[in-house]
Image (cartoon, rainbow, N blue to C red; front, side):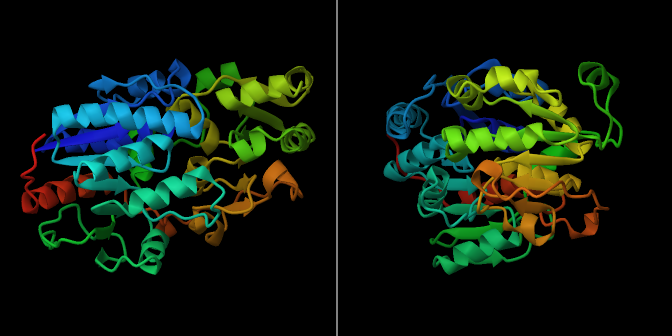
Length: 387
């Protein structure tokens, strides 16, 4: 059996670190990197430090408008899938790489598995919302990370739900995977797998980070801004930086390439460099980022992944958006939505003790479940099509 995995952006590399490791124990995996994120700090560093297998194909798409980028991906992914003729295509999340992989698989009538299915922000202006909805509705196996994601899919008409809560074991031998309609399963969140397996979560900052940054635990803010609604809007970016510069703590800001480009365009870079509390850095690797997150007073972000990781670690999060696809982070009290441009910022939240028994993201065995379910599904769905 052969599975073609399609990745292209930072969050997908992290998820693939857990799933590819398990998947390669039972099937042949062909890893396709679209090149959506392409420089070292946004791509190669994750393959290196998380020991992700090197891609079998790197399509080198690079940046561009949504239509241009997705169109190029469709053309090149199709060529690879026709050549490899996999039994299943696996995609992650909600990027243009996800959409292109999903549409190509659907057109070629290859079963599609979607990791992080069922997320909804209910904001149709977001490109990610379109990508994730389209991907879900052409998928054969929908791997949900949370109970809320399952609920969203049920409301959209998916009724073949194997288990509303997270599956109770790593295997899938008890599941009836021979059904023809798409199957929805709550397997837990792969990001929690990675967090548990790659980072020895510590209450102290490693000595190399103490040497790199003038910080102490619980006495600084971690901030990331990259979404177009914030980064491309001068008024929003100016207000966010104004809010951050007034915080009476050090603020570490790893700069996404989009953000770096925009603060130069908006003439904010020099002012931010001269600020007494702001520390600008290049994009960070996963492990360094998680240590900084785990020891921060709170995080200010518009990143979906960081909202979730903050919740997993029990770090208060202020999200510069009006909605979130990770609703449980708000319901569990770890996340506050402060609006685009941080317009509703009214002070820093206090850290509180985390109740790890109430973790909504599973038990850290999502990748094992995904692997066994794909294996079981493919045994029931042998493909007769050859290109």
